[in-house]
Amino acid sequence: MSSQDPPAVARRRLRLALRHARQRRKLTQQQVADALEWSLSKVQRIESGDVSISTTDLRAALVLLGVVDPRRVAQLTEDAKASRRQRWWTTAEYREHLSPAMLQLLQFESEATAIRVFQATLIPGVLQTRAYAGWIQHFWAGDIPHADMKVRVELRTRRGENLFEVPDPPAYLLILDESVLHREVGGAEVFAEQLEYLLERIRQRLVTVRFVPFRDAVKLVMLGSFTILELPDEEDVFLYQEEGWGDSMHHSLATIHRYREIFEQAWEASFPPDVSARLIESCVLRLRTLLDRQRHSA
Image (cartoon, rainbow, N blue to C red; front, side):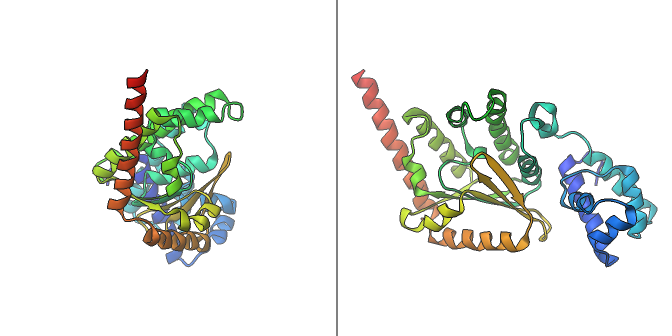
Protein backbone atom coordinates (compact mmCIF):
# COMPACT_ATOMS: atom_id res chain seq x y z
CA MET A 1 0.00 0.00 0.00
CA SER A 2 1.45 3.37 -1.03
CA SER A 3 0.42 7.00 -1.13
CA GLN A 4 1.80 6.89 -4.69
CA ASP A 5 -1.00 4.55 -5.76
CA PRO A 6 -3.25 5.91 -8.53
CA PRO A 7 -6.18 7.95 -7.17
CA ALA A 8 -8.67 5.31 -8.37
CA VAL A 9 -6.89 2.57 -6.42
CA ALA A 10 -6.68 4.65 -3.24
CA ARG A 11 -10.30 5.74 -3.55
CA ARG A 12 -11.56 2.21 -4.02
CA ARG A 13 -9.56 0.93 -1.05
CA LEU A 14 -10.88 3.74 1.13
CA ARG A 15 -14.53 3.47 0.19
CA LEU A 16 -14.51 -0.30 0.69
CA ALA A 17 -12.89 0.14 4.11
CA LEU A 18 -15.60 2.60 5.12
CA ARG A 19 -18.39 0.40 3.82
CA HIS A 20 -17.09 -2.71 5.56
CA ALA A 21 -16.54 -0.80 8.81
CA ARG A 22 -20.13 0.46 8.67
CA GLN A 23 -21.44 -3.03 8.02
CA ARG A 24 -19.44 -4.45 10.93
CA ARG A 25 -21.07 -1.86 13.19
CA LYS A 26 -24.45 -2.85 11.76
CA LEU A 27 -25.23 0.73 10.81
CA THR A 28 -27.27 1.84 7.82
CA GLN A 29 -26.12 4.64 5.55
CA GLN A 30 -28.94 6.78 6.94
CA GLN A 31 -27.77 6.20 10.52
CA VAL A 32 -24.24 7.25 9.58
CA ALA A 33 -25.58 10.35 7.85
CA ASP A 34 -27.68 11.30 10.88
CA ALA A 35 -24.84 10.75 13.35
CA LEU A 36 -22.37 12.83 11.34
CA GLU A 37 -24.97 15.42 10.30
CA TRP A 38 -24.35 14.65 6.65
CA SER A 39 -26.89 14.12 3.91
CA LEU A 40 -27.70 10.53 2.95
CA SER A 41 -26.52 11.25 -0.60
CA LYS A 42 -23.10 12.27 0.73
CA VAL A 43 -22.64 8.92 2.45
CA GLN A 44 -23.85 7.07 -0.64
CA ARG A 45 -21.55 9.01 -2.96
CA ILE A 46 -18.52 8.41 -0.72
CA GLU A 47 -19.21 4.67 -0.52
CA SER A 48 -19.82 4.39 -4.26
CA GLY A 49 -16.65 6.32 -5.08
CA ASP A 50 -18.47 9.19 -6.79
CA VAL A 51 -16.75 11.74 -4.56
CA SER A 52 -13.64 11.93 -2.41
CA ILE A 53 -13.73 12.43 1.36
CA SER A 54 -11.73 15.08 3.18
CA THR A 55 -9.35 14.02 5.93
CA THR A 56 -11.48 15.94 8.46
CA ASP A 57 -14.65 14.09 7.45
CA LEU A 58 -12.72 10.82 7.37
CA ARG A 59 -11.53 11.17 10.95
CA ALA A 60 -15.07 11.84 12.15
CA ALA A 61 -16.38 8.83 10.23
CA LEU A 62 -13.66 6.53 11.56
CA VAL A 63 -14.45 7.45 15.17
CA LEU A 64 -18.13 6.71 14.58
CA LEU A 65 -17.32 3.41 12.88
CA GLY A 66 -14.94 2.28 15.59
CA VAL A 67 -11.76 2.40 13.52
CA VAL A 68 -9.26 3.64 16.10
CA ASP A 69 -6.03 1.70 15.47
CA PRO A 70 -3.43 4.44 14.80
CA ARG A 71 -1.73 2.55 11.99
CA ARG A 72 -5.04 1.83 10.24
CA VAL A 73 -6.18 5.43 10.64
CA ALA A 74 -2.88 6.64 9.17
CA GLN A 75 -3.20 4.27 6.19
CA LEU A 76 -6.74 5.41 5.42
CA THR A 77 -5.77 9.06 5.82
CA GLU A 78 -3.03 8.57 3.22
CA ASP A 79 -5.60 6.95 0.92
CA ALA A 80 -7.93 9.93 1.41
CA LYS A 81 -5.14 12.31 0.39
CA ALA A 82 -4.15 10.16 -2.60
CA SER A 83 -7.75 9.80 -3.78
CA ARG A 84 -8.08 13.58 -4.02
CA ARG A 85 -5.20 13.94 -6.46
CA GLN A 86 -6.50 15.21 -9.75
CA ARG A 87 -7.23 12.58 -12.37
CA TRP A 88 -6.93 13.41 -16.04
CA TRP A 89 -10.67 13.52 -16.67
CA THR A 90 -11.32 15.86 -13.73
CA THR A 91 -9.25 18.68 -15.22
CA ALA A 92 -11.21 21.68 -16.50
CA GLU A 93 -10.28 20.65 -20.06
CA TYR A 94 -12.61 17.66 -19.77
CA ARG A 95 -14.84 18.07 -16.73
CA GLU A 96 -16.95 20.98 -17.93
CA HIS A 97 -17.84 19.09 -21.12
CA LEU A 98 -18.84 15.78 -19.51
CA SER A 99 -22.06 14.62 -17.88
CA PRO A 100 -22.10 13.36 -14.27
CA ALA A 101 -22.78 9.84 -15.58
CA MET A 102 -19.78 9.99 -17.92
CA LEU A 103 -17.54 11.16 -15.08
CA GLN A 104 -18.70 8.16 -13.05
CA LEU A 105 -18.10 5.86 -16.03
CA LEU A 106 -14.50 7.06 -16.31
CA GLN A 107 -13.98 6.47 -12.60
CA PHE A 108 -15.42 2.94 -12.71
CA GLU A 109 -13.59 2.04 -15.95
CA SER A 110 -10.31 2.83 -14.22
CA GLU A 111 -11.13 0.31 -11.46
CA ALA A 112 -13.02 -2.38 -13.39
CA THR A 113 -11.93 -5.99 -13.61
CA ALA A 114 -14.59 -6.88 -16.21
CA ILE A 115 -16.65 -4.79 -18.61
CA ARG A 116 -19.60 -6.12 -20.60
CA VAL A 117 -20.92 -3.97 -23.42
CA PHE A 118 -23.78 -4.17 -25.89
CA GLN A 119 -23.85 -1.70 -28.76
CA ALA A 120 -26.74 -1.71 -31.19
CA THR A 121 -25.51 0.77 -33.78
CA LEU A 122 -21.84 1.73 -33.40
CA ILE A 123 -18.41 0.56 -32.28
CA PRO A 124 -18.01 1.59 -28.59
CA GLY A 125 -16.12 4.80 -27.83
CA VAL A 126 -13.08 3.11 -26.23
CA LEU A 127 -12.54 1.14 -29.45
CA GLN A 128 -13.10 3.97 -31.92
CA THR A 129 -10.43 5.42 -34.18
CA ARG A 130 -10.07 9.18 -34.17
CA ALA A 131 -11.56 9.42 -37.68
CA TYR A 132 -14.57 7.25 -36.79
CA ALA A 133 -15.18 9.17 -33.56
CA GLY A 134 -14.81 12.49 -35.36
CA TRP A 135 -17.36 11.55 -37.98
CA ILE A 136 -19.88 10.51 -35.32
CA GLN A 137 -19.46 13.80 -33.47
CA HIS A 138 -19.70 15.74 -36.75
CA PHE A 139 -23.04 14.01 -37.37
CA TRP A 140 -24.39 15.75 -34.24
CA ALA A 141 -23.15 19.20 -35.30
CA GLY A 142 -25.82 21.74 -34.39
CA ASP A 143 -27.08 19.64 -31.49
CA ILE A 144 -23.81 19.56 -29.52
CA PRO A 145 -21.51 22.59 -29.00
CA HIS A 146 -18.30 22.46 -31.05
CA ALA A 147 -16.12 22.55 -27.91
CA ASP A 148 -17.98 19.53 -26.52
CA MET A 149 -17.52 17.62 -29.78
CA LYS A 150 -13.78 18.27 -29.82
CA VAL A 151 -13.40 17.06 -26.24
CA ARG A 152 -15.51 13.96 -26.87
CA VAL A 153 -13.29 12.88 -29.77
CA GLU A 154 -10.17 13.34 -27.64
CA LEU A 155 -11.88 11.57 -24.75
CA ARG A 156 -12.58 8.43 -26.79
CA THR A 157 -8.93 8.11 -27.78
CA ARG A 158 -7.66 8.69 -24.27
CA ARG A 159 -10.18 6.31 -22.70
CA GLY A 160 -9.02 3.52 -24.97
CA GLU A 161 -5.38 4.12 -24.11
CA ASN A 162 -6.05 4.19 -20.37
CA LEU A 163 -8.29 1.14 -20.47
CA PHE A 164 -6.23 -1.22 -22.62
CA GLU A 165 -2.63 0.03 -22.55
CA VAL A 166 -2.01 -0.89 -18.92
CA PRO A 167 -0.30 -3.93 -17.34
CA ASP A 168 -3.53 -5.59 -16.20
CA PRO A 169 -6.47 -4.45 -18.38
CA PRO A 170 -10.01 -5.56 -17.56
CA ALA A 171 -11.74 -8.39 -19.39
CA TYR A 172 -13.74 -6.61 -22.10
CA LEU A 173 -16.67 -8.56 -23.56
CA LEU A 174 -18.49 -6.87 -26.43
CA ILE A 175 -21.72 -7.83 -28.17
CA LEU A 176 -22.42 -5.96 -31.40
CA ASP A 177 -25.60 -6.10 -33.41
CA GLU A 178 -24.79 -7.65 -36.79
CA SER A 179 -26.13 -4.50 -38.44
CA VAL A 180 -23.01 -2.62 -37.26
CA LEU A 181 -21.07 -4.37 -40.03
CA HIS A 182 -23.39 -2.92 -42.65
CA ARG A 183 -23.35 0.67 -41.36
CA GLU A 184 -20.41 2.31 -43.15
CA VAL A 185 -19.88 5.16 -40.74
CA GLY A 186 -17.76 7.88 -42.36
CA GLY A 187 -17.50 6.07 -45.69
CA ALA A 188 -15.57 3.01 -46.81
CA GLU A 189 -12.06 4.25 -45.89
CA VAL A 190 -12.96 5.40 -42.38
CA PHE A 191 -15.01 2.30 -41.69
CA ALA A 192 -12.35 -0.09 -43.02
CA GLU A 193 -9.72 1.52 -40.78
CA GLN A 194 -12.10 1.26 -37.84
CA LEU A 195 -12.73 -2.45 -38.39
CA GLU A 196 -8.99 -3.09 -38.83
CA TYR A 197 -8.36 -1.36 -35.51
CA LEU A 198 -11.03 -3.50 -33.85
CA LEU A 199 -9.39 -6.63 -35.29
CA GLU A 200 -6.04 -5.50 -33.90
CA ARG A 201 -7.51 -5.23 -30.40
CA ILE A 202 -9.09 -8.67 -30.80
CA ARG A 203 -5.78 -10.23 -31.91
CA GLN A 204 -4.06 -8.61 -28.94
CA ARG A 205 -6.62 -10.45 -26.79
CA LEU A 206 -7.72 -7.20 -25.21
CA VAL A 207 -11.30 -7.56 -26.44
CA THR A 208 -13.63 -10.48 -27.06
CA VAL A 209 -16.31 -9.69 -29.64
CA ARG A 210 -19.45 -11.53 -30.61
CA PHE A 211 -22.06 -10.47 -33.15
CA VAL A 212 -25.67 -11.16 -32.34
CA PRO A 213 -27.51 -12.24 -35.53
CA PHE A 214 -30.23 -10.00 -36.98
CA ARG A 215 -32.91 -12.50 -36.01
CA ASP A 216 -31.93 -12.52 -32.33
CA ALA A 217 -31.17 -8.84 -31.81
CA VAL A 218 -34.68 -7.44 -31.35
CA LYS A 219 -34.82 -7.64 -27.55
CA LEU A 220 -31.35 -6.16 -27.12
CA VAL A 221 -31.94 -3.36 -29.59
CA MET A 222 -35.11 -2.37 -27.74
CA LEU A 223 -33.07 -2.05 -24.53
CA GLY A 224 -30.53 0.20 -26.22
CA SER A 225 -26.78 0.27 -25.71
CA PHE A 226 -25.51 -0.47 -22.22
CA THR A 227 -22.34 -1.19 -20.27
CA ILE A 228 -22.01 -3.34 -17.14
CA LEU A 229 -18.90 -2.60 -15.09
CA GLU A 230 -17.67 -5.05 -12.47
CA LEU A 231 -15.16 -3.92 -9.85
CA PRO A 232 -13.03 -6.21 -7.65
CA ASP A 233 -15.51 -6.21 -4.76
CA GLU A 234 -18.45 -8.43 -5.73
CA GLU A 235 -20.88 -5.81 -4.42
CA ASP A 236 -19.51 -3.21 -6.83
CA VAL A 237 -21.29 -3.49 -10.14
CA PHE A 238 -22.74 -0.63 -12.16
CA LEU A 239 -24.89 -0.17 -15.26
CA TYR A 240 -24.22 2.67 -17.67
CA GLN A 241 -26.72 3.53 -20.41
CA GLU A 242 -26.64 5.93 -23.31
CA GLU A 243 -30.00 7.34 -24.30
CA GLY A 244 -29.92 9.63 -27.33
CA TRP A 245 -28.16 12.81 -26.22
CA GLY A 246 -28.20 11.74 -22.57
CA ASP A 247 -26.70 9.06 -20.39
CA SER A 248 -27.23 7.64 -16.92
CA MET A 249 -25.55 5.44 -14.32
CA HIS A 250 -27.61 2.89 -12.40
CA HIS A 251 -26.75 1.35 -9.02
CA SER A 252 -29.84 -0.86 -8.50
CA LEU A 253 -28.62 -4.45 -8.11
CA ALA A 254 -31.97 -5.81 -9.28
CA THR A 255 -31.82 -3.79 -12.50
CA ILE A 256 -28.18 -4.66 -13.09
CA HIS A 257 -28.85 -8.36 -12.47
CA ARG A 258 -31.59 -8.34 -15.10
CA TYR A 259 -29.35 -6.68 -17.69
CA ARG A 260 -26.57 -9.12 -16.85
CA GLU A 261 -28.95 -12.05 -17.47
CA ILE A 262 -30.00 -10.58 -20.81
CA PHE A 263 -26.36 -10.03 -21.76
CA GLU A 264 -25.40 -13.62 -20.91
CA GLN A 265 -28.34 -15.01 -22.88
CA ALA A 266 -27.39 -12.89 -25.88
CA TRP A 267 -23.72 -13.86 -25.51
CA GLU A 268 -24.61 -17.54 -25.81
CA ALA A 269 -26.92 -16.87 -28.78
CA SER A 270 -24.32 -14.82 -30.66
CA PHE A 271 -21.74 -15.98 -33.18
CA PRO A 272 -18.60 -17.37 -31.47
CA PRO A 273 -15.54 -15.09 -31.28
CA ASP A 274 -13.71 -16.82 -34.15
CA VAL A 275 -16.74 -16.59 -36.43
CA SER A 276 -17.28 -12.97 -35.42
CA ALA A 277 -13.65 -12.14 -36.25
CA ARG A 278 -14.07 -13.71 -39.69
CA LEU A 279 -17.18 -11.59 -40.26
CA ILE A 280 -15.11 -8.48 -39.57
CA GLU A 281 -12.29 -9.70 -41.83
CA SER A 282 -14.78 -10.37 -44.63
CA CYS A 283 -16.22 -6.88 -44.28
CA VAL A 284 -12.74 -5.33 -44.35
CA LEU A 285 -11.85 -7.31 -47.48
CA ARG A 286 -15.04 -6.13 -49.19
CA LEU A 287 -14.34 -2.50 -48.30
CA ARG A 288 -10.68 -2.64 -49.35
CA THR A 289 -11.61 -4.28 -52.66
CA LEU A 290 -14.18 -1.55 -53.28
CA LEU A 291 -11.66 1.19 -52.49
CA ASP A 292 -9.04 -0.37 -54.80
CA ARG A 293 -11.53 -0.49 -57.66
CA GLN A 294 -12.44 3.14 -57.08
CA ARG A 295 -8.78 4.19 -57.17
CA HIS A 296 -8.10 2.25 -60.36
CA SER A 297 -11.14 3.68 -62.09
CA ALA A 298 -10.37 7.28 -61.05
